Image 1 (cartoon, rainbow, N blue to C red):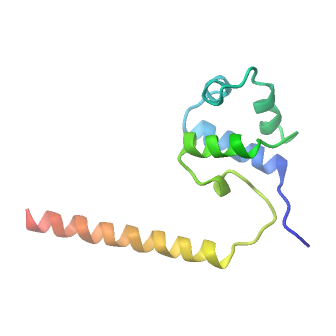
Image 2: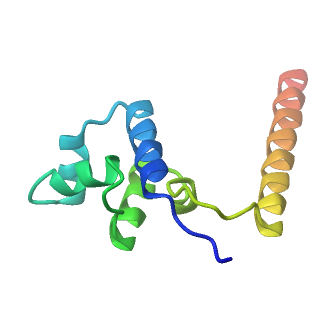
Amino acid sequence: MYPIIDKRETGINIRRIMDQHKLTVKAVQQFLGLGSAQSIYHWLNGISLPTIDNLYALSELFQVPMDDLICGSRTMTKRDRQSSSVDNNIKRLHAYYEAYRRLAA
C-alpha cells in the first residue's frame, strides 16, 4: 500500500504550529497573499490541503521543513532516521563548543 496524507491530522498539525507561533488565520492569509481566509479554514478543518506552493510558503513562515507540516501514513525512512541522528550530533557538538568557550573565557 502506498502512503497517503491524512487531511484532518494535517489540518490539526498546521493549527498547532500556528498556535505555537501565535499566528492568526488572518496573518497567514496576508502572508500567503490569499484573497480570503476560506481556503485556510478548509485546511484546518481537513476539507482540503494547501497547494505545494502554499506548503512551501508555510514552511518558510513557520521555519519548519514541509514534511513537518504534513501528516500521513508513511513510516519513518532511513533518510529521516539519518537526519535525526545528524541533528543530534550537531546539538551535541554545539554543547561541547559552548562549554569549551566558557572554559576558555
